[in-house]
Image (cartoon, rainbow, N blue to C red; front, side, top):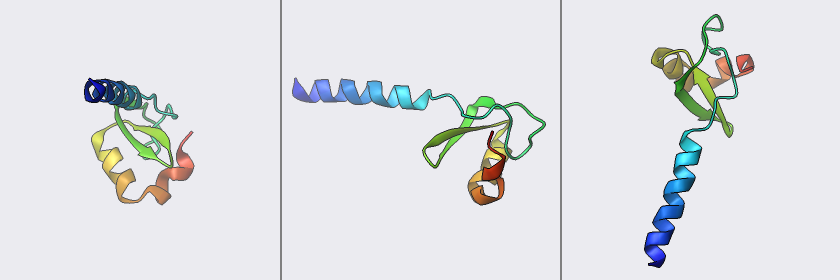
Length: 71
C-alpha cells in the first residue's frame, strides 16, 4: 500500500511539472514568432518555450547564445 501511495504522489508531481507554462511568450531563437507551448525545455530551473522543434534544438545546442533573449 505504501508503494502504491508513493507511485500516486510521484505521478501527480510529474504531471504538474510537465504542464508548467513557459516563462516567455516569444521564441528566443526566432523572436518574431510566438511560443508553441508543446515545444519547451527547462533552462536554469525555468520552462522556456519555442516556436518549433528546430528552434528548441538550436537553443539546446548553445543556450548561452539565446538565453539573453528569454522574455
